[in-house]
Amino acid sequence: VGSGTIHDLCKLVAANQNKPYLGIATAASMNGYLSASASVKLSRHKTSHAAKLPVALLCDVSLLEKAPIELAQS
Image (tube, helix red, strand yellow):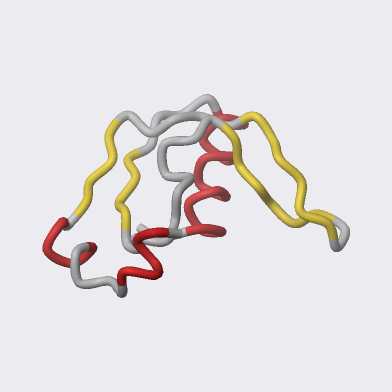
């Protein structure tokens, strides 16, 4: 459960452990929930790594639709 960094860390760990995972979207501004890469900060630099897609992504549309339009557009 989370956005950005938390979700990318879960994707990366799932790929490294060859385990399935379920994603739960919590932010309209996050566009990487269904990306096969994870951006993580290593040695002060963000780098992209091959990751694993979730087996499913749950979204509370009523929560996400309340986000400011600027976040949804990002």
